[in-house]
Image 1: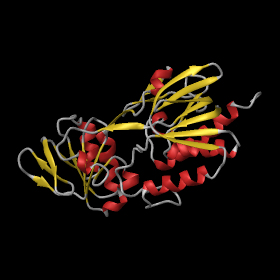
Image 2: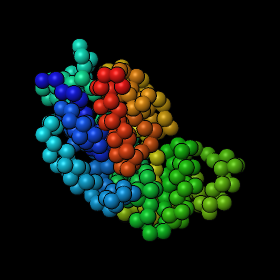
Image 3: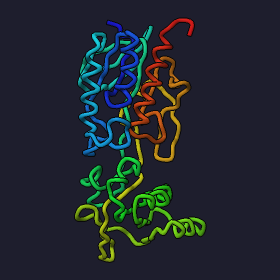
Image 4: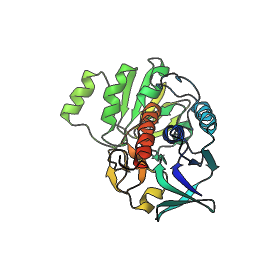
Length: 293
């Protein structure tokens, strides 16, 4: 059977793209491996109408609403291979070959965390990357910024709106005179020494033995594509500050008929922007199926 579109990735962006295509009465299938980027957090914030809900519950409700459309199919599994074929594309999911005229990649990215002892197990609980998503809940307490690159300046200058900030340089970069002045103007404390580990809820233990207690810690991760499909298809990439993302024109990648949305196609993102991006991508994929548009 030839679907009108396959959506690879059943999280916020993919579900949103799928919903537009379903409502356009197109026959679609969603492929999902259950690896949401925000699966480590207990609550999602900043998404209108869903503020404070568990992200898994939001996605669960969205999936149920999508599957109420009789023209939607769902496959739980990992899409491991994608290739063009005459009239569309073929995607392999656990040995099953699915075919469609259009392909929507909502495959997301994976975060590469700084190699600091104790950070991985606190990721999404007391260590974060998005102030808008998690800053408010720290209740104006002490906040740390763990530098992994010069991008730490962005966090360090933003976060004083949420609490008292300490920037831990940890050998990642050295602020210049202008940056030092900007940090001082925002009353940011700078710790130049190396970080040994994280302890307790979110305390930073320095190599000299001092412990600095924090309500939460922010760090900028490097990101990589969570799926090899875009590279297999020959899609072009842009190089963002955090890592590569898919190049698009009107939501379509450099490969005709392949669309992309969400974190895989944006330099930065969160739940709300992923949903909006998915909506626009679903509409673009639908319009591409209409002759003359």
